[in-house]
Length: 88
Ligand SMILES: [Zn+2]
Image 1 (tube, helix red, strand yellow):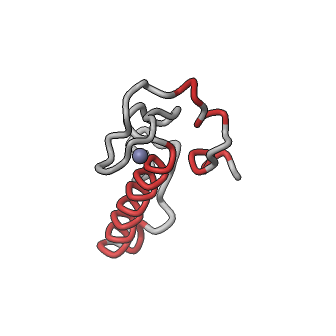
Image 2 (image 1 turned 135 degrees about the horizontal axis):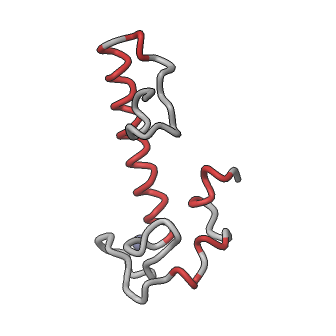
């Protein structure tokens, strides 16, 4: 488990009970306790699905961006103040 995917480790302290919000998970059909270090709204397994959906959507944007202008490939900068899509 790397620092980048700690959200996926149910045993990680950032997924511990101290982050539970006291409310049920907001995902339809899920009654697990909500709350992780990443969000007070979802339980840990649903938070993983949520983060992975967001990651897939961002990857699609990245691929579309690269397709529109191939010179943008490799310009993704995660520390950027512009949101990481292009270098500042
Ligand atoms: Zn859930």
